[in-house]
Length: 352
Ligand code: ASP
Image (cartoon, rainbow, N blue to C red):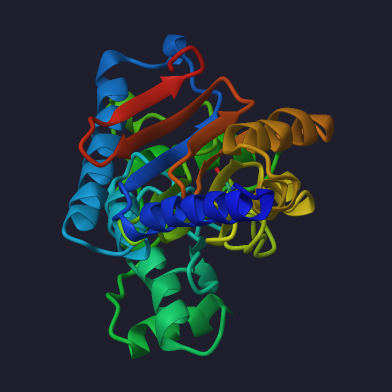
């Protein structure tokens, strides 16, 4: 057989195999995080640990149910993050940390890897689900980012639930604010209007201010059509001032998705993630250097982030189903799930 025709046959076989792969429905997959930081066994009661594990399991199971029914990656991301925003254990929505002036200033972003459409919001104070607002910016406006009272007004305009500021109040986040402001020698603002009176009794462990300031939530998903999406929602960092905004709503820093490479959601001290454009850098390593996903996330989190003394972690996924996480803190609340499998949930560094 002539070399040319052998080459032709080989090419045909390879193309057919590749086509068969893309034509088959994809096995959906999800990776979730609930924040990274100084999260150690010694500072966790079994009760608290169970609370976090239950919250992660509930969110990832809900996202899986959306994907099982043929929902899109963005639908799954939104569904899981809404649940975590309603869970007071996590620093997003209800349970968000307080800014120095005693307000909760919420940030969120979502991005669709198939279309590169995205929505982001910052300093939202009255919208119950900031991730739903980010989704509305993506799907129902011609913009990508909205901030402050204008963002809340858009939420009301498109019919998203509005709540009084006290809805987001939790005692342990308030105590964390008091502690931080006292340590900085700064005045403590009055308790927000509508907040419950200060408790006379000692707080239960789940209500106590935690040592780590993080708890941001994020999710990346791959749906059965082979599309990926990423979303992140946060209250930012305790005692933030001057309408500081972190990486979570900054596309390419804390959140990014492209079917050409990967989807990423980050958590940690946002300023470092913005400077390194962490999420987009990971995707660029995958896209232009052809790096496996785990190698790319480790390169950015373990080497590049560490080199500028940044702390935190990321979760990521690719359209071909690679799932990864990487963090340089003692712990990160995290979970993974693939179609037909069981959720894998982790908190501490030594867990798989
Ligand atoms: N990255 C978030 C921020 O800087 C905080 C966090 O992840 O805990 O706003």
